[in-house]
Image (cartoon, rainbow, N blue to C red):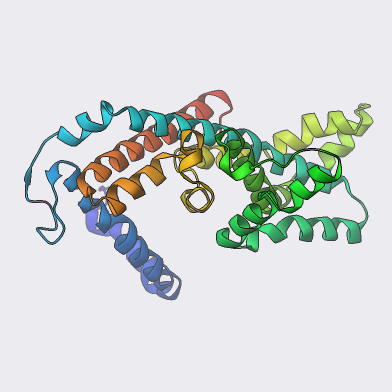
Length: 309
């Protein structure tokens, strides 16, 4: 039998497109969005290698090579904000990744539907508050005359200027992230828990497994693909520590622990107008993020057999 021609190989795809064109048309707007706001702006990365002046050429005036990369590699301020980014990213990952799993497992054990829905609603609510509102609440609560210091005074202590001390910033930031994101993060895990085969629990009970062993040997392996996928995605955003919240919470007194790459880029690129230097740092940050995603995906595929691709 003769091998099919390339034209015949393309026919099924064309037939599917003609048959389901309404469904494919739904992808047009998302594709246009990503093309306009994600892929076309990548062309602007060229100014990391060219001298850009506001009002001049969109792609820079003249070629500078790796000049801006050498500048930030030898800049002590950059390495300080780079370290702060790593520390805040690691703390956020350590606390904000496992806690939704723990909360989902606890909610899965609650048999009272009314109590379960109440806890879910209360834990989801902070996610729907804007970052501006969350930052304002944090500033009000932790101000010198705020609720926290009023409680400190009530027990005979001295008020603490939390938002003016660099040593407190990381604790405040990570705590607010946990409060705002953990409840919302349980949604995917609760959905994944519904897909675990109930016969596995029955078999585990017959073998004498208690609730803890059922969770360890049945529940966690059942939601492992979801856990791995979200872990890889979280690692991908490891360097992109929350710019908006940090910008609203930090001040020059907390720069030693609060200033991260995104806020440093804002001051250097937008405030100071050195866009080529900022583009070089942003490109460096993106390369690190891509490397982390690829590494996490490869490690996950080799160790647990589950990956994004």
